[in-house]
Length: 304
Ligand code: GLU
Image (cartoon, rainbow, N blue to C red; front, side):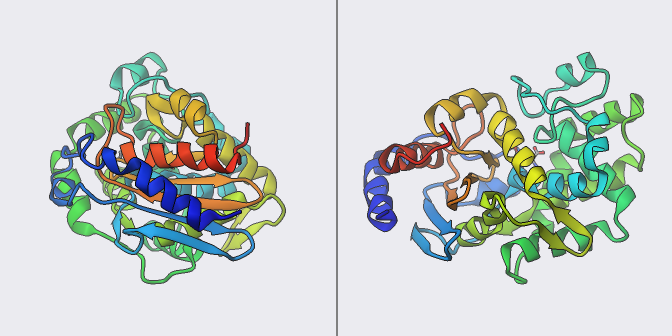
């Protein structure tokens, strides 16, 4: 497959979208990012690598981090994880309080904020040093020890994180948060603040394209069966209340974040990462989603 040529064609075709959409500014630090950026990288299971655009610039991965926290929690808790968080698409905004109340404090899935806050709580209870252990896992899965938390972004989000604080309080009320509310929020915001480039993100998603081997690191073992399930949750829940549209257009398990990043996989073949900060009204990168739609259209490689 002529991936590099296809990426060049895609970049040319999506150029008119460069100024479409708005970057997230509800986290003040994210409003500082130049919104007119675009990068795309493919890392294949055979060790090939293709990239184009701003692929080495680090951005805030935000909710893409929820794939890594879910991986750790599923590996540690096994199926018991699902007693505290569901695995159904939410069909509601990623920070919906109403839905959490209707569901009596059991979040719909681990990729909406409420679900990821419960997962953060579980990791805090299970890991000896949650902050260090989470970052070590991300560094290992990406094969890059230079990856860091951006504590300025985390602090900026905490300062204005009223809705997430409300979610955490509601979880506590319903008995689905074991640790101190403030400590869980701090850890959750820190996870979201991890910075990665497209190149690093594509590599970090490669284990999710692997259908055969168990991924192991320091007590976290992701079996092929668990990888299959994480991909299923990505497919059904990875794009907030745009998950159906994303499935329809793209057809690759993936996860987006309000920093404008997307990580996705074509199982058995490759992982792909895109970054472009301008978002559609559901919170997904405009150029990123279009690029992935064109990728699966031109390659005819999708899970459907
Ligand atoms: N840290 C962000 C929040 O909690 C993550 C949201 C996202 O990327 O979807 O609002």
